[in-house]
Amino acid sequence: MIPVALYGIDIEQCEEFFNQFQELLGAVQSGYEEALYMIQGNLRLEHLKLIDEWSGYPPLALHEEVAQEILSALDISSYPNAALVESLLTIEGIDIMRISSWLHFTTHVYPIWNEEACAGLQKLGLNAPFEEDIAAYGIYVGLIEAMKEYAPMDALPESPLPRQRLLEIALARWSRKE
Image 1: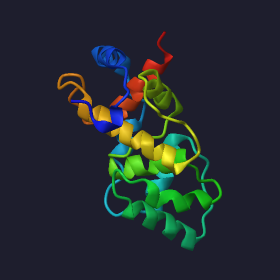
Image 2: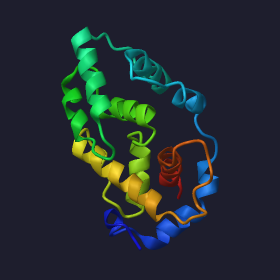
Image 3: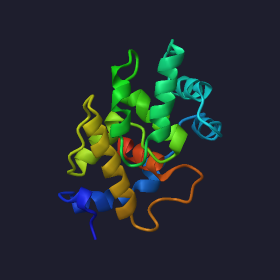
């Protein structure tokens, strides 16, 4: 049964995507797994710095109050709701891509916002806009979750990595296939 979020999906394309999933997956980005499991315990600013370093974001110069606001917003976020972090978009240097990386590494369930993965979802016939808008990121989160739910049992490999990340990588590579 197709999850509601996936209504309109091109079923033939989706079946082909999952048939090719293992070869699409290939190698995961270097240093990802190490970074993923370095974030442990209570969320601290040092964790965000590690995530930013892995993601290639320049360091943020934050006042203590702003840093506490960021940590609080991330701490109270409840998957799959992304709306609670929208206020962070008003802080200079913070965008949805950075927030999605923070959410991913601190919770292991939110997907990382990715233009190519959105294009892969679009190639499957799904509405996955890549816009600087928290609602668009919320749609992306819902679609990735629905893809996990809809995936054939043998499509997603056993892995110490979050299934969201595996799907993102495969969708990004799917978007580049002819």
